[in-house]
Length: 56
Image (cartoon, rainbow, N blue to C red; front, top):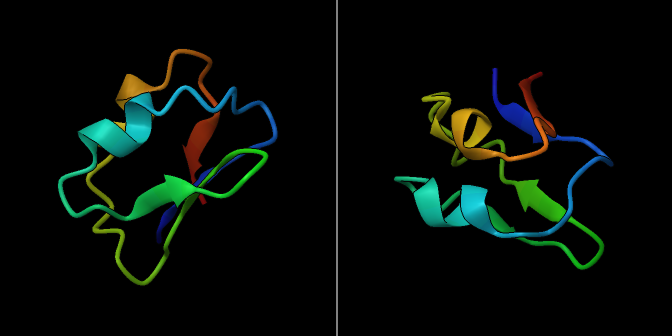
């Protein structure tokens, strides 16, 4: 199951820089994860400074 970014996202970009498959992009108000590309590695969740990413 792919990870998801909640409304707590502060658009810092840390997660996108850490994603090994480039599944995360700037969605305007917050970053978004492409569920079809996400490999469920969890590196984005461990990088997020506001804990806005969870398995979902």
